[in-house]
Each structure stands twice: as structure tokens, then as C-alpha cells.
Length: 277
Ligand SMILES: [Zn+2]
Image (cartoon, rainbow, N blue to C red; front, side):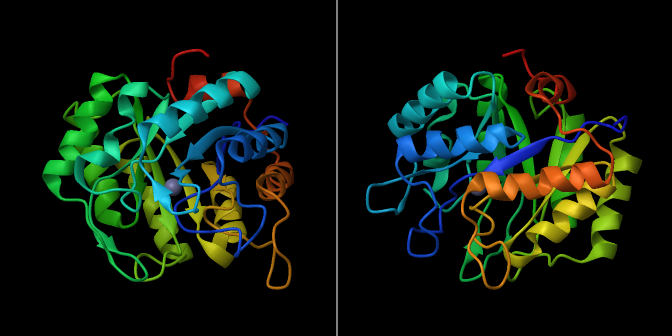
């Protein structure tokens, strides 16, 4: 296969799904490390991680993030570790409390929108502070774009030197009350990145039943993509996904269909401009 390598990101846990939704959702640190290891074997090179309390509620405890980082470094050597600074696990600056641990990457939301039952609040001063912490600790941001304006804001922040390293934008589609998984919107997102930030890499994630669809759009269009139980706990209407690895495997199979090699850890690090493992 000669196409551009495709980076597969696995969103292993998230803030919301519980064992009641799917028993395969990894909650404890050891479950998270085990599930990540399987996903890496299936082709994932980025692990996007949140941490949880013992009762499965979301946590922003830096000590838990430290334990997870240690486990991933030991059992998935070289894998790109990406911590979430998303807003469900804490408020204000507690969202970035784990950044001094210097993960390779961290997610960054640069604007506000609605989520299924609440406002996803990302005020400009908090966005600027999270970005400045990432610059301080040499952490590449994965900007989570829930809307077109977030893509334009990310490009503007990168041009102004407010984001560390290379620009990397993820289109998140299919969140209820935010941008649906609409192919023409997706195409416009891609065109916008190509037109305004031609050097940048982009990826895309679809939530719930749109996961596989958005995986396919992204792979066909030359981008990178994300799968995993954070975004979707099912294989189809009737079957739960047995693991994170099973969802990554589906994306890897699509790479084969479109003749794109699945990126190795070294290729992913190089494409994203990260330090070598
Ligand atoms: Zn997340």
C-alpha cells in the first residue's frame, strides 16, 4: 500500500459510558492499560484518555493520570499519550491540572457549543490558559472542533503562536445538539483545512452510530481518524462492541479498503511533529 499512512486514535474511556452501557468500557487504570494494549495491537497509535473514580464518575485527579501514563509507557512503549482537558471531568483550570505530567498531546476545545443535556462551556480566558500551559510543557494540542468556528479559531491560534508544535485538528461530528455527521459539512471542513492550513494534519471522529461512517469519510479523504468506546459502545444496532480493539480493527480494515497503511508509532510521531518516543 502506497497511500499516506493513517493515524488511528483510540478514545478508550471518556467521561460518560459505564459498565452498564458496555462491560468492556475500561474504568480502572489497569483495565485502561490492558484495553489500550489491545487497541495498539489492532493499529492504534494515539491513546486519548480520561480517568475515572472507582464509582465510574469522571475524575480530573492528576495522580490518576500519572498512574495511567506510567502504565501506558510500560505496556505500550512509544504510544502517543493524549490526555483530555475536556469539560466533563472538572471545571475551570482543574481541567488542565494534569498537564505538568507532560503527555505527548492533550485535547483542547477552543469554543463553546451545546452537548446533549448541557452547555459545553469554553470561555476565551480558559482556552487561552489551557493553550499556554500546553506551550509551557511542550504538549501538542489536538483541537476538538465541534463546529466550523472552532476550526477557524484553531488556525488563528496556531498562526499567532499560541499552540505548541504542529497544528492538529479533530472534527467531532454527531454529538447531539452540536454538529451532526453531515457529509457536505465534513467536505467543507476538509476544504477549510486545506485552504487555510495546508501544512496541518486533521482527523475526524463520529459519535454513536456515526462512528464507522465518519471513520470511512476521514480515511477516504486522506485524514486520520478516531474510534473507541468513549464515542460509541456498539458494533451495530444489535451488538455491543466487545472491546476498544474491535472498533480500531474496523477502522484498520477501512484503511485497507482505501489502500492506506495504518501509521506506525514512528510514522505518527513524525507526521504530528512529536518528539521521538
Ligand atoms: Zn475525550
